[in-house]
Image (cartoon, rainbow, N blue to C red; front, side, top):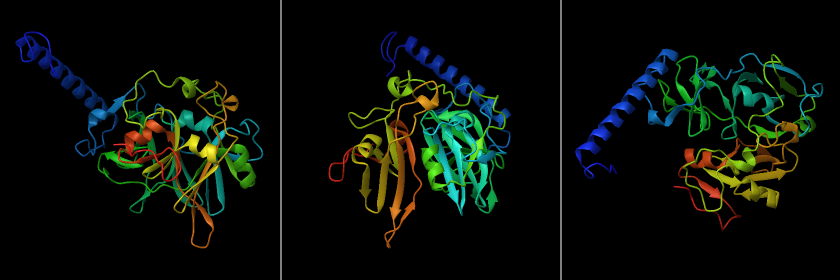
Length: 343
């Protein structure tokens, strides 16, 4: 692998290799010192992943400010959010709440309690992953913040109680005392505000604590839908599937949004996935309310008595599923002609 100088094992090549190794070690030591200073409670000796996979790309601890005291208004009383703008919605025991992506893309984390259940509302715009988790673990309630780091272009969170680091896409602790533990996902929908209002007219809508703090309603991810990212995304994907194509993730399986859009409804065992038009992309136009229509997805399970109940799911970019579910399966066509599993 090392070439140049007097040949593969020539002295100049070995010297260059040694210099590179020392430089890398020095960088790693400097990085670790920064981590320890920011997170003095984190047990960095315990981790389930290679720490080199974690990238510091500018932000630091809570530079992207989480919301710990969320404010809500009646869903019918706020006129700033467009009817097709996307919201991540949760309903527990009659308590229905909607979290607009125009707010989540600037804060990424909301610690809230819905229907008496402490929840973590998480959204990573880099991989378009929006998942709601139960914040309870072993009888304790965790509070979450943002490390400012990413892994495979996905947010790395931390909990205040142990300062363990958590992968947002998986809801799994990857560094620290809680390494290997996972949070339970809560059924939630990524839908337009219009659809949320129709099914939960008494629901509540998250509003900014300070409307002047960010350019809410404007997205910095202009054109990502069409241009993609400048950085190459080195994750194996089935032929013809773009890294930033949206897929509907349920556990270790993912259906392309194009497949759902084509058929409207897809059934897989007792799972029922549906797509309906009328939701703006936040990765398209500068103003979210003018973003192209990517549609609404609902994932439900059919019970023995025929009733349907909501299931946890994620509408993420394909590369994220490939990165975090390397043995998962992409469904590119209907049953019998599915795409190959990603290895």
